[in-house]
Amino acid sequence: DQCTQCGKAFFRNSHLIRHLMTNIGEKPYQCSHCEKSFSLKNSLIRHHSTHTRDNQYQYSQCNKSFSQKGVLTNHQRTHTWNKPYQCSQCNKAFSQNNALIAHLNTNTGEKSYRCSQCQKAFSQISNLIKHLSTHTGEKSYQCSQCNKAS
Image (cartoon, rainbow, N blue to C red; front, side, top):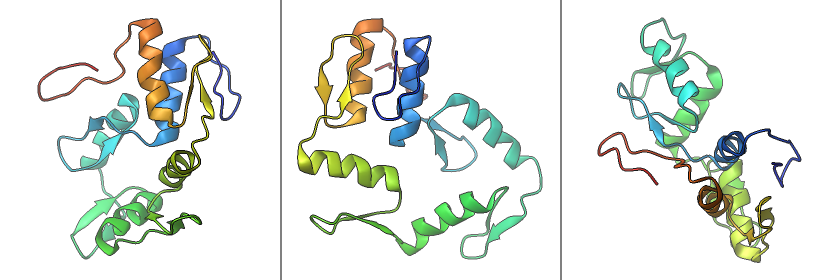
């Protein structure tokens, strides 16, 4: 299986799905200590350690602290509504570049996300991820509140 965006090949379809989820910014794994969520379960596990060690980047507006400067910068955008990524067609703005890319694909109707199993094409990567589970039977997301899988 191969990513249609970057060409990276994967031995298992589940690894391709995980890669695609990271690309689109879907974050189903939420930290129980704070509001932060992650695309990958391993990232959440790594994040948990930030609650037990000293975080050197502190944001004075809400007193939250972070172990990485980039994470602090992303967090600051939630307070300032800073959305530096703007659509040239409709002027809608986004805080993250991957959200702008998904939006652009929706605007143009371009279906650049193609299933490697059946060649069906999608304009949004999230729809491709949902579709891929029809081939594998795998559930890509499980709710931590009710354990329902989708």
